[in-house]
Image 1 (spheres, rainbow, N blue to C red):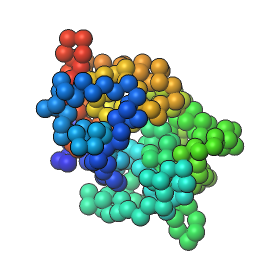
Image 2 (image 1 turned 90 degrees about the vertical axis):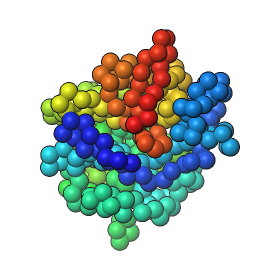
Image 3 (image 1 turned 180 degrees about the vertical axis):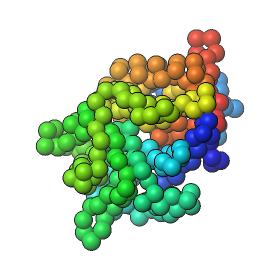
Length: 293
């Protein structure tokens, strides 16, 4: 992926894993209708739909943003060495994620902020790494930012995990260590960080999900986390994913986000879109279409 530019902001992506075979469409997006592929084949194939498997392509990646002297990561994927008995995809991984960051010129100590859109297993795993049998912050000079509601939702001391929960162990090995290290800044509600970055609550996928809006020199972008998993959801905002805790609220949040992208010509950058990982959204009558970018 070429570096994306939003005014004075430079944005790259570090891909932990690419799921090119795709996730079964009806499982990822239960409302999925095959007709969207037939009507928009030139747009969706091979970009985000694999016709050989019938799957929606996914990527698990971090966004790497540079603005001034700041180096900011948005979402930190699955992480290595993590015990994920209920989520085989993330179990005991040994992936060259830090090498991917190094290829972008980023060392762990260079990162000044880590923003987790939410605390699902595949969004906070590299918050920590295993050192001498102990989970320690991967990015020791960073402030880790996420919403208080999200922290409270996934704290097993408040809400014991259900049987089969794919987030089992995530709080203990990927969240609590950075909290105990005093590196966490919790956000209550919407928050303007500086003249270029604003955090806004985007509930539905999880209770405390957030997005980050960017503005620089009249250009706009948004890190959207899991408000959308697949580009087809930008075209059909009422299609919630099978992983949304509140599908109705998620659809309402997604609709507002898509309309914002149309209104501001904002580059939409979710956590799982396949390459080139971002899209512009255009209104077309009563529907929406996308332009990969």
